[in-house]
Length: 85
Image (cartoon, rainbow, N blue to C red; front, top):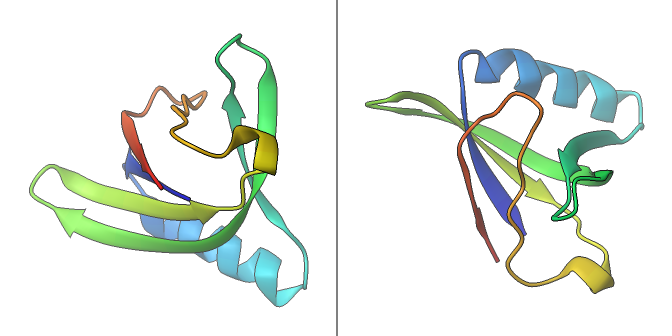
């Protein structure tokens, strides 16, 4: 599953992901579920794309079986995002 986030400095997050993965550790996306509880899922890939509106961060995440399907992820940074299967 992937999610798209607008970001002011996607390259900094991408660098954090790469550094974490280089140490054989897991990078997580923290988000609030539909009832407002914080959850986290492993980020398995990331890419930064420049758009007319600014940088867009594309994250591929591993969702548990119970959460598969269309999921709306709202981050603490209040980024607008679109999730795709």
